[in-house]
Amino acid sequence: MRNAMVADTKKHAEVMITWMRLDPKDWEPVTYGQKIAKLYSNSLLVYPARGVSDEHYGWVLEQLIPSTSMAIDALPQHWRLPQQSIA
Image (cartoon, rainbow, N blue to C red; front, side, top):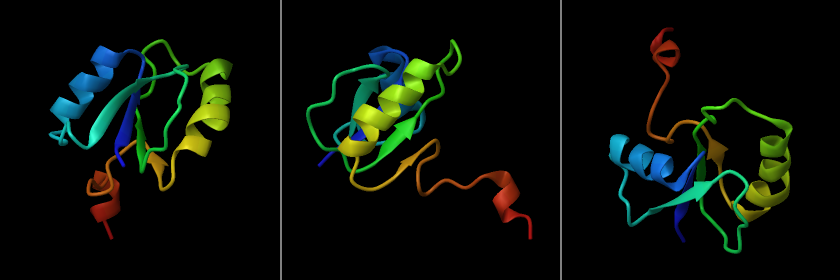
């Protein structure tokens, strides 16, 4: 089962997969609003360049959440925010 990288465009999602040095065999580029017909393990969201709209919320709730079996996040699981390392 593959993971989904969600962005404004397929190209943007592909660039994010490459930039984050994720394995392209494990990640599939998905666009906001795309019809989803399969199940993904995890999903990473790239915030839309045009800003988040009600359409994005509806699509995430109706299409993405039911199609993701594990986690939906904005950071890969092995990444940490700099603030998390401050104790």
